[in-house]
Length: 176
Ligand code: FAD
Image 1 (cartoon, rainbow, N blue to C red):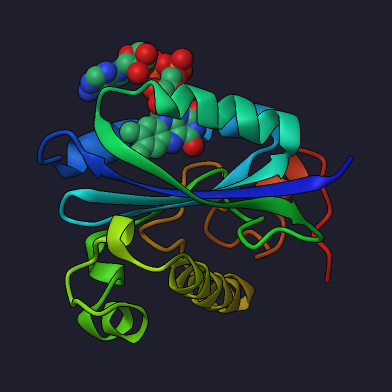
Image 2: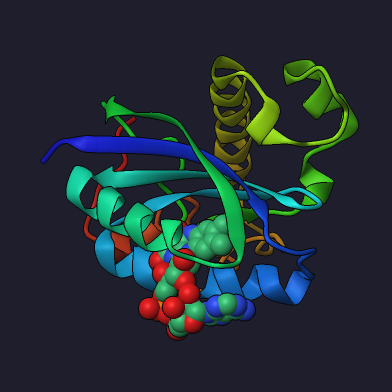
């Protein structure tokens, strides 16, 4: 089975609260876990940037559902391709709150300090996600004394070895 990665950006239909973020992440983790889809969802003030990884079929089915969601608009497909390995294999859907998108990080990849991925160059979006993936991977590889705040329930519990989260659940082995 080949692996596929899809990246899109969109704008929230209206200002969303952390509760809205949690609702979106809740259904994402529930559905993605069953479908073997992993990824990251970054929240800006009114913007979303999401990376979906899994089988081409599962990623397309997930994206089709997301396209019809009234909670966002101006949905822009940025990149989709076959890939050799996952970037975010630890997470059914890792939620990145606005605090992780620091001014410094955003400015490294865009002309504005406000995180607006629908206005960023595709290559910059991909570079930003690769950067985040490296950072999250380093965090996940560190000895776990307690689960980080953004760890989805069930993906990696406190004290659980770092590389045995969702992958074990969905029967996938992470490539080294
Ligand atoms: P439930 O989550 O139980 O929701 C039932 C229905 O109510 C759905 O049709 C849903 O669209 C709608 N709904 C729920 N809350 C609201 C609300 N506050 N306002 C309007 N309608 C609402 N889903 C995934 O499975 N995987 C993802 O990775 C994923 N990423 C997403 C990223 C973004 C930016 C957004 C906005 C949504 C995302 N979703 C994702 C949600 C997706 O669009 C569907 O809502 C979800 O897949 C439906 O799951 P469900 O059938 O379990 O329904």
